Length: 268
Image (cartoon, rainbow, N blue to C red; front, side, top):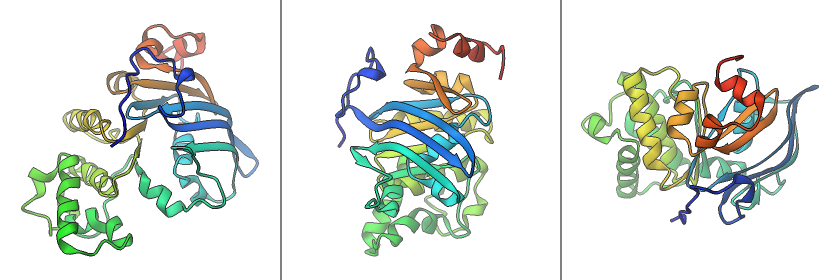
């Protein structure tokens, strides 16, 4: 179990390596000739929720996708700098990307359950890892669904198609699929933007519970959501981190005028 730290008054620039889940140093990223990220430097603390906010196209999702190398799938992607996940350089030539994506799970804006039943959706990654003992699989599926606050709603329907679930249930199913692999980090890219307010509240409460067992990084356009759920917030603009601090400070006493203008709605 990861050790929990008291970050109440910790300056993110003062986090130690032991307290850091992800360390980004001098990160630059290009798609073809277009540079999308510019000299990103930040530390993301363990067992906390960190939010990335900013205008559409500012690089939030691209930065998030660097942490488990999902940008590799885009093609013509060039990365320089370093990203350490629990001390391991994820862009090392020796890095096993499949294992990285198991330990750094990702949930996207639109729920993407596989065209199979609920049980097989959750167990899919475990089967790829060679977990075939049925009793172990049953226990893992049940625990993942409980962790995603979905078990009570689907325990009698595990072998029905995932497509029968509502949008909010499908999103929690996708979270359960990621949690079944016991990730140390969970990346959430606009996970509630397509959901109703009640389901959004359920997933926000779920995030609060999950940070006890894993680090969470969320991209959101909803500043109210970032202020509600996150412990730390980074404001990005045109591929650069303008300001990064604990969320209370950033939303109440931003240090940069550009941040203040954005969170008060003067632009964006």
